[in-house]
Each structure stands twice: as C-alpha cells, then as structure tokens.
Length: 293
Image (cartoon, rainbow, N blue to C red; front, side, top):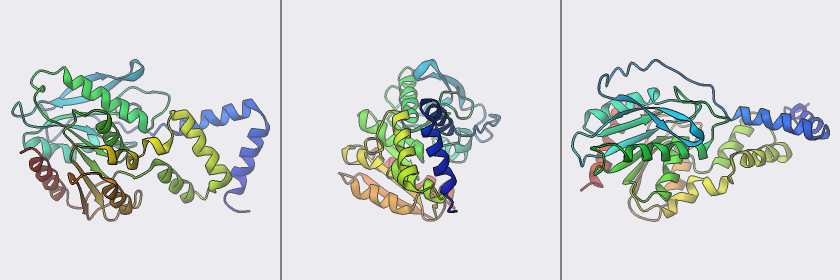
C-alpha cells in the first residue's frame, strides 16, 4: 500500500462516523498546532543584569514572558524581537546580545505556547502577530522609549508576523526579516509532501480545516500579500542552505516589494541561523543605520 493509504482510510472512517468523529479529528488537529515547548532557565549570559524581566498582557487575558532594556539614547532604535515556531527569546540570545551591545534597545518575549509564556488553545501566525501587537502596546507605556524608532526583528513565523504587523501599524520604523516564508499554504504543502500525505483529498481537507481554526485564509496572511503594501524599510535575510524555507521564497518576497527600501541579503547558512552570525549582525546594523539618517 502507498504511504498515504492508511491515513486516508482513517480519515474516511472518521468522517463516516459523523459529527463525533469529525470533532475528535479537529481536536487532534488543533493540538498539532501547539509546538513542543522549549523552556530554558533565563541566565541571560551575555546581557545579564541588563535585560530586565517583564510581563506583557496579550489576547485572552494571557501573559507573555518578556525581557527589556531601553536604548542607550532616547532616539536610538529599539528592536522588538519575535522568535520562530517552537523557539523562545532565549534561543535568540546569540543575535540579541551583540545587537544590544551596540546600544540598541531590546524588547524580546516568548509567544504564547512558547518558552515561559502562558499556554493557549493553539499557536499560529495570527497569534504570533497578536503577541507582537501586545509587545508594541506594552512598549508604548515605557518611559524613555517614546521617541525611539521601533524596528521589528523576527525569525521564520516571527518574521511573517513582523511583516503583517508592520503593514497595519504605520508607526513601525522598519523590519528585519530572518528566514521568512513567502506563503504559509506553500509551507504546509511542503510539510505534507515530506510526510508522504497526498494533497488531494487529504491534504486539501487538512489545510482547509487549519484555515478555519485560525480564522484566516492563508492567502490573506501570507508575507507575499503584505510586502507590496509596506512603506517602511525591510531587510530580508535568508540562508542559502535553508531546507525548511527555500531561498527562492526570499527572492519572491523581494520581487513583491513596492519600493526601493526593501533589500535582500542571502548568507551561507540554514533556516536557523547564518554560518557567520557576526556578518549577519553587521548587515542588520548597516541597514538600520542607512535608514536612520
């Protein structure tokens, strides 16, 4: 039998069982949208006693675990850092620490269902965007941060959230996007292919259910849909050896941009990080400086 036969047979049996079978399957699907939580003690080795813990209220009366340090001067940029799926603010420290050392303000946080933040029923791109909105709202209430330009820095789904939030919040100064995918539907189809699950009819049905759960169509929340509408500068950084999100996605995003302030930087490395992190930091600093004059 082919790889997809038994999952397809199981789906047919559940649907034939009626409403109860479909409800069970949807509950399992919702549970699959919650990543395995990665928690690490926050010793903050490179910036200890500098980034101070904070709590950020987000949607549904949940709380986000965050860490904050104001900028070195009132007009120095603040970077709001959004990690990727299954990650945490702690895992972004290798990038956060050298950027903080240059004087940038930092607000890093764990998204819901990640790190040390509260749980929720599931995690998805729209909820990453909600949590980023909550972080920006929290920052607005901090003394000494009022005049500082707010730059969004995100990785993977966190980068997709940054591009979405930048579109709906004109006060964002710019976006640093690391390893963003072009379209979540395409990302999910690659995931199905890797697991030998046929798109029709099983994969198509699964993706339709996911869109219903998250309350958004993939086409509407895709970074490809947002970039043509952005007016702020955007730096797209992508690993040349990324096997999770192909570098062609970065080229498509760059091509979709509507102004010259969107730049593409492809570096040796995979989905998680460049081979030369120092070079990545230099590229980020140079881009922010270029658009801060």
